[in-house]
Length: 240
Image 1 (cartoon, rainbow, N blue to C red):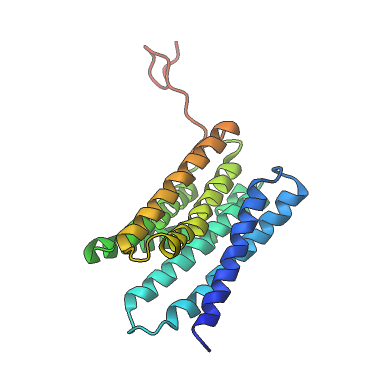
Image 2: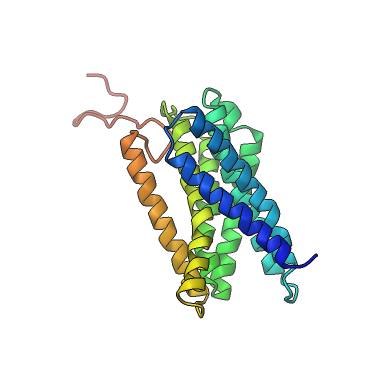
């Protein structure tokens, strides 16, 4: 198989994911159009994961175990975050099912892979790996905490997971695309540091968007009810 076939397949799937992301984001939330385009977006993101291995493994370069680790890491990241965004909606009335055995396996796996990628990025001086490690560390850490905690859940915990996962996927869709377009149209001699800067910039945009949506819909960054602070002059458990 020619190397450009899987590459163009990946570009086509990625372009479709980009269109579906914005079609979903700009549609009326909860509407039939929103649900349909959202499901199509999630399925397209999963399909994009399947198109990455041929692109990476068929490149005419010497075998590099680091590329395999990166491939596994990014595949697990996208697959897990898509799963979070999807099941948070489907199982919003079943929190124990949402954080079931699959959740407890994927959380530690994601966090461990994120730590490996961070260390490897720092040791090798690879800024892209260092920046991208946030996915595993943040989502993996949040999954571990959510699975183990038995604190009272926020009434809209499921929407917090859904929105956070969607904007996590925003970085996956737009980070590489922004860099590739910049390199193709503006600066062909860009390097790994430039790529890392683009990924970091897209991450900042995603955080800003998550903040705006969170304020409009009264969504916390966490998933649990806040414990009321004790009245001044009283200790917890003290009855007047």
